[in-house]
Every structure is written in C-alpha cells, then in structure tokens.
Image (cartoon, rainbow, N blue to C red; front, side, top):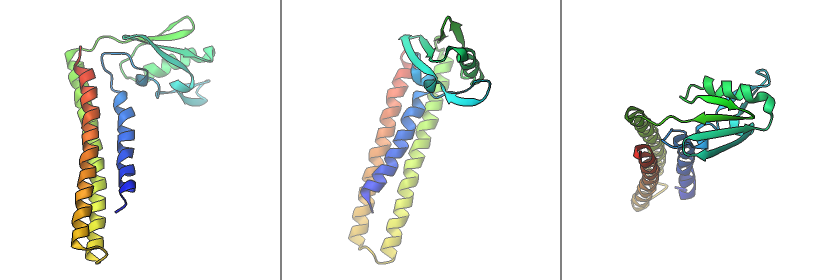
Amino acid sequence: MDESLIRSRMQQVIDLLIPDIATIRTGRANPALVSDLEVLVYGGQQKLKINELGTISVPDPATIVIDPWDKSIIGDIRKGIEAANIGLTPSIDGQVIRISLPPLTGEDREKYVRLLNSKLESAKVMVRQIRGDVMHDIKKSFEEKKMSEDERFRAEKKLQELTDEFISKIEEAGDKKRQELTNV
C-alpha cells in the first residue's frame, strides 16, 4: 500500500471539489461565478473562458465587473453570460460589463444548499471509491500471501485513517461554504 499515492488520489478529489463549490452563488459577488464560463467570441470562431478575455473585479459585494482586453468582443461576452443561463444579467457600461447580483431569496439559499450537499456527497463517494479500490488490493495481496494478517490489519487501519481525514476535509469545505450561503 503506497500511502503517498493514495493521499495524492484523494487530494485530487479535494482539488476538484473546491473550485466546483466556489461556483455556487452566495449572497456576495465572487469572480469564480463567471471566470470559467466559456463564451463564443470573434464571430463564433473561438470558445474562451471569461478569465482569458479580460480582468474580473468585485468593486462591491453585489457587483462583478468584467473589463475585456479586446473591447470589440464586449457584446460577445455579454451574450455568452446570458446564454450560460446562470441567473446573472450582464449590462454593458461603457467599456466594461457590469453584473449586479440580486439578493438571494430564502428559496434560492435552500436550493444552493441542496446543490452544495449533492456536490459534497459526490466527493465523499469518490474518496470511498478510492478506499474500496485499495481495500480490494490489500485483500488480494493477503490472499496471495504477499502480506501477513498483521500487515493487512495495519494497512486497512491506515487506509481508514486517510479516508476519515479526507472526508473531514470535504465536510470542512462544505461547512465553510454553507456558512457563506446561510449568512444574510
């Protein structure tokens, strides 16, 4: 059992989860809400992420401002945000795009908490799947007499400790995001 490999695989789950839950809207403006949205620009010739097309700033808790480097594609970016259908309404204000975030209703907050819980559960399932794969390998090694019963017991115990550690990290990330969602 290669602990560093298992730790690395479980860390990949966390590394996928954190940016994923950052896209869940809270009551505050956050560049992550739009930075990875892909939009068609230059007459539909290229599909690029908004963070590749300009700077994204948050001048106040309810506004996101996108300042495109190429001002000729400002309309394409606005259309792309509208087409993403994520509940944001961009408007062109001179040379920048402004997105004013309406306050979340109680119903919206509940919907986003449910979405968060679903994403957290998926991450936990992935970590448990890794544990299951490694448990299978441990059992196979034991049956092929490549490890003693004591070694098997120690390996399983260490694996469970790793699993618990990463499940705890997932719950920590979820608690932090849930706090952002429920604070009005």
